[in-house]
Image 1 (spheres, rainbow, N blue to C red):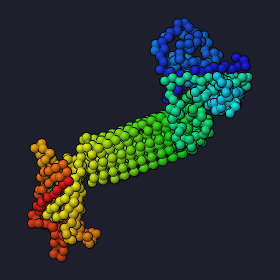
Image 2 (cartoon, one colour):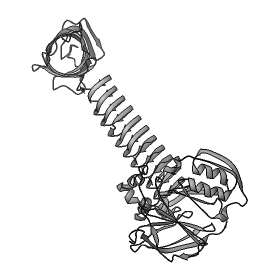
Image 3 (cartoon, rainbow, N blue to C red):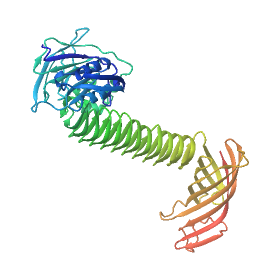
Image 4 (tube, rainbow, N blue to C red):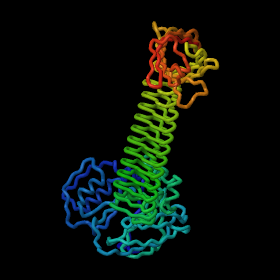
Length: 572
């Protein structure tokens, strides 16, 4: 084939896998000066010292341009943009930078075709599933089992730039100015892997997801594995992945506005993405993402991710995730998660709201769940319909049941509060002037605990109740303590009407002595307030419990009494 018609260039990839659209070699800093130097000569010299390889047709360079510029510790792309101006644009493919006209020379599209075979340079083995694509039109194909391929592409440019890519092999670039059949097979050399290169698994991290596999084609997934090229486009429209304006290379394109009628697959979004069913992005999303069923992102989310059923993000979320069923952020969330059923992330800073469950390793903010919250470290507020679980709490747990290893600061508010390291659990047998036989259960912290209790008075009535209190040690000794308590009881004969109310409020001020580690004795006075609407014909309470009331008044159909009583208890 004539050299004027086609140029074959091998690309050696070292640390050039794209990270959010840039290669690792962008970190290389170059110091170079051009003194009365022609542009083409300057490009040749820059190509020699840069880790990137430059590809361009000399015909596209503006003639007679002389450079007098100096650059100190600048990246290759920065230098190229300075010296080339706005008439030329750069396309980066792995370790390779293609220079072409920013505006196509032709108004009408021209068809270009390339046809041939692909082999391993060392073994001569025919290579299948090699990606072949045109960098401007994004038309692509894969080689067959014999390593053969045919690709036709339409572009407004005067020539087409085809790239041959396969994972673990060096890329090859071919420029074609007309239809050509290659006389000899293209040979690909295996690439050397450096420590700075991201792994293939990391590069296509979103692909193993079952949902991602369901919505993406085999060709799209293979292209994502092979192709080391990321483009940015202002708009894309697709029906499903591979059937859209970005074709089979949709997974290599970042879009500013993406409309997926059913499902879409892209490298990332910087703007808005809307999907009728599902959106899949290999890397980051910056902006707003709406999916009728859900969204999957392989990198970060900065903004809003909203899915009718599910949102999953492999990295962190800086913003909000809202889903009808489940949100998953594999790394962390800084902002807001709201899921109809559950939210899951490693580290949460902000607010989590779920219909059933929230789960994190670390929480700074608030967790609200209809049933259960779980985290290792809690800094803030946990509210659950049934249970809160944390390894360490700095703040407040509010639920029926609260469980933690320790409360470093704050309180637990619930019927059952368990703090394994610095809390206590104490069942007790009690007797007082109202109920001679009562079983109580205290749990929580010395500074604030809850009390559950139930008792009977022969066959006259029974009672149950809840309350809270504090245990304050005296004389810097663990033996003597006082524990003021406020408790509420409901009394019942077991055969009364549903509208009968017999409410007893007691304020106990007990003095206690810790005999042994699991044995204590308490006793003290109590202030009782009794309110009942269960009255006999004379207007007296049917369940008459007041002993020498200091206040006894009637109000409508209710009677209210106040008196002083006592309490005695043995705790275990």
